[in-house]
Amino acid sequence: MEVRTRFAPSPTGYMHIGNLRTALFTYLIAKQSGGKFILRIEDTDQERYVEGAVDVIYDTLRNCGLNWDEGPDVGGPVGPYIQSERMSMFKEYAEKLVESGHAYYCFCDKERLEEVRKIQVASRISPMYDRHCRNLSPEEIKEKLDAGIPYVIRQKVPTEGTTTFHDEIYGDITVENSTLDDQILIKTDGMPTYNFANVVDDHLMQITHVVRGNEYLASSPKYNLLYEAFGWEPPKYIHVEHIMKNATEKLSKRNGDASFNDLIEKGFMTEAVVNYIALLGWAPKGENEIFTLEELVQEFSIDGLSKSPAIFDPVKLKAINGAYIRKLSPEAFLEKALPYIRQTVKVRDDIDFALLASVLQPRTELFTDIPEQVDFIDALPEYDTAMYCHKKMKTNEETSLEALNAVLPVLEALDDWSVDGVHSALFGLVEKMGVKNGYILWPVRTAISGKQFTPGGAVEICSLLGKEETIARIKKGIEKLS
Image 1 (cartoon, one colour):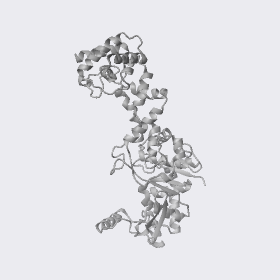
Image 2 (cartoon, rainbow, N blue to C red):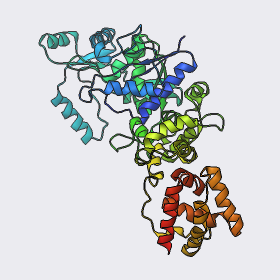
Image 3 (cartoon, rainbow, N blue to C red):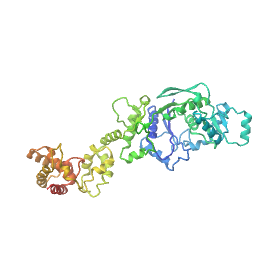
Image 4 (tube, rainbow, N blue to C red):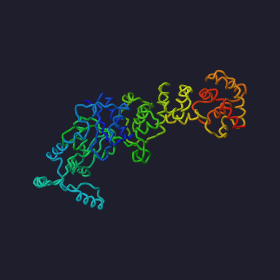
C-alpha cells in the first residue's frame, strides 16, 4: 500500500518551529517510502484566520524543500485540499453515524450545559457532557427537529469497556470508555468540529500515517471509535513530544519564541534550521548530526523518535549553522555575506571583499554577526588604550608603544602591500627583535581595528585597509599611547 502522509496547518500567519517539525517528519516518512506528501489547509477557524497566511505556509515549506505532491495549488485526485471547501459533506457523514447508532442529536442549550458543568466542578467531577439527550426516543427527536430546536450531533461513545489504539512511539494505549466524553461532531451551525473533520478528511484522502503533537493522545481513542463506527482502517499514529523552551516552558508564539521566519531574519541558513529541527526529538543512529534534506530522507526512522520533550537549544542551532556556513564555497559565502558586510562597510569600495569574506567565513556562525565584526573598516572606532594590555601576549601600553614605533618605518617602506608582503614584513620584524609574535601583532591589530575581536589577524586587516589607512591608524595609535 502506498504511504500517504499529510501536513494540515491552520493559516494563522505564523509557522511555529513545532509546526515545521511536524511537516518535516511527515515529509520524511512519505519520501523514504516513495509515498505521497499531501498539504491540506485547515481554515475553518475563521477567528484565527490571517490574510496572507496561506502564502506563509507555501513559502516556508518550499524554502525548506518540503514540496508537496498534492495540495490546494497543485491539485490531486482527492481534493479540494482546503477544508472550508469540503464543508458540505461532513454533516452527511455524521448523519450516517446517527443512523447506525454511533451518534445522536443533542438539543441541550448553552445555559443547561453551563449549569451541568458548574455542578460537576463543584462536585469535583471532571466536566463532561451528562448524555442527557443520548437516549431520546425517535418520537422526541422528530418533535424537536420539526420544532426547529437547534442541535448538535454528538459521538455516542461506549460507556463500558475499554478502547485500545496503537501509537508508533508509545505502543498500545488502553483507556476506560467511561472516561471519554461524547464529543460534538457537528456544531449548531452545521459545521464540523476539528476532530471530526480530521477523521473524515484523513480517510477520504487515504492518509496512512498521521504525525501530530502528543497533546492529541487523549483524543485518539475517540478517533479510533469513529474509524471503527464507519468501518474504516485507522492510520498509523505518530504522536511527537513537545519542543520546550526550557524544562518547564513550551515554545510558543505567546511567549515570543522564534518562528521559522524569525530564525531566517536572525541570520540562520534554511538548511541549518531544517537540519536542527530534525534533531528535536529524533536521534540518528550514528554520531553524525549534519544532514542535507536528501540525507535525512535516507537516515530518518520512526524508531529514533523520543518519548521525552526536546529542548530548543539556540547554541546548538548556532553551531550547526556555523557548520553549514563553513561548507559554502567562497563565492557562495561572499554572495550571502555581502549584504551584511554592507550594513556597516558603506564607504570603502576599494577593499578586497573576497579576502574579507575568506577571513570571515571560518569565524561566522550567524550572518547577523558580520556587521559588528567589520564596523571598523570605514572608520577607526574610539577605543581605550587599556586594550593594548594583554596578559597572554605579554603586552602593555609601554611595550605596545615600542612595538608600533618599530612597525611604522617597516610598513612605510613596504612596496608589496599584499597578505604575503605584510606577513613577511611583520614576521621579519618579530625575528629581528627576538620577541614573540603577539608582542608585535597584538598592538598592530589593536591600533588598526580598535577592537579586541576581529575577523582575521593583524596581517589580513592591514592588507584589507590598504597601506595609507593602515599607517594613518598606527600613527594615531602611537599618538594615543605617547
